[in-house]
Length: 325
Image 1 (spheres, helix red, strand yellow):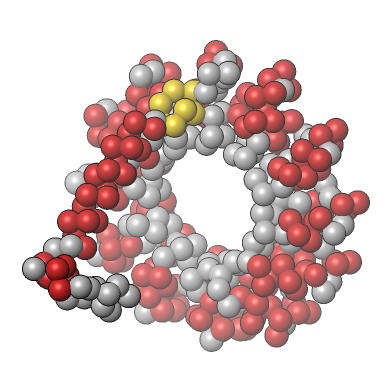
Image 2 (tube, one colour; image 1 turned 60 degrees about the vertical axis):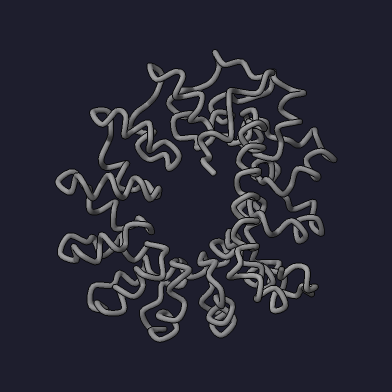
């Protein structure tokens, strides 16, 4: 399913003359609209847009290769492979979908940026090149927990406190005196938030107000919420609806779950922030319908292929003899 085709134009109530096209060029759901308004595209920002690669392929002279080197669309990686002289290797080093390309060009890797690359394959490269690791950057990489556990003396504990990786609570709970609680307040790992519950006096409530997984904790301490930051939290809309006088409309304009509130208050919208919002577009239901029918047909054809009929019992379905005729 192509994300670019899932959306059409802007929602009917949105004034297109107030949209910031430069910002919109970075919005992954804006591609259909941008395709119809190519004179308004910011090609630098579009070059980093993972849903815009087919537009970039049609306009190669407009590509910004630095931004494209960060683009995580597999087709962008293929485009880079065919233009190796244009690759910006520093930015490519952080691209989690470019690791195979990096593996074949080890001498061009920016090792500091590779330490920020959130790919298990990037970690394997680093494990084979321990002397090149930037331990500060690696400390916030969610795929590096095992490697960090083996090198406790090299950890940057502030960056580790930001790390949402599975198992991070083991390191943090064993070294609570080293935790940076400002950073931990931004950590969306649910077990990390449980550590915050035991240290309420150390929480940065402004940063926690942005934390999507900390809503239950914020609900218990309404007096400590910073409503400006809460206004951009997509999981906090029910609280904002309950306390509308506390809404910060600039921040709310970027909130993907607050479209219904923004529609009712167009005079309060920050249009630059709204241009970043992924939910300001009409959904292309006809495309979704056609795609789902195609996907369903593929699944049915694969599941009911003669080679798979014998597997149905293992999948939890009982077969009668007539199924096998």
